[in-house]
Length: 194
Image 1: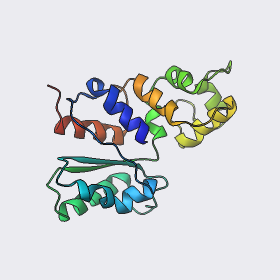
Image 2: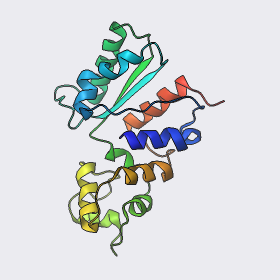
Image 3: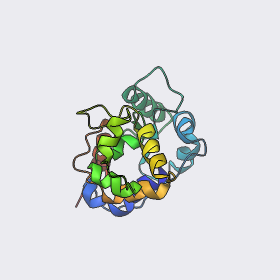
């Protein structure tokens, strides 16, 4: 996640439709659950040195089972406003179910290139025939399992570099994922392109 977000800031500002600004991308030591329950550990010390903060994490694995991603985002944003952060200075983006969902906004050929797909069967067909993608659907129900299965088929490890490569190359214009749309629109509101 950290490498993907850093790559978007470093190389895709124009595609995101945002201006240049100083950014500090950090990962919480407790990953998704830490972002949900203890984001203040990272954010509160930076409250006076940073104008804005955006927290991105996966719903799957964060430990929340009662609220939707959208409900969780609203609750966490209100919590930080109650802690003294200015209105609209902290945004939470909860990806449902996980970051791999953003990959499937790309053309399958881009995903094939990024993971080094060498099979004669196209990735889309392989995912369908192996139960990871329903016919006619754009995204797998469990995107992480689909990516992991494809990587296992290729005998390749899951790497941050693969996600960074995809973040550099995929078209951002066609990603309709709700969390990605919130991520982009929040940044555009805060840092509009000049």
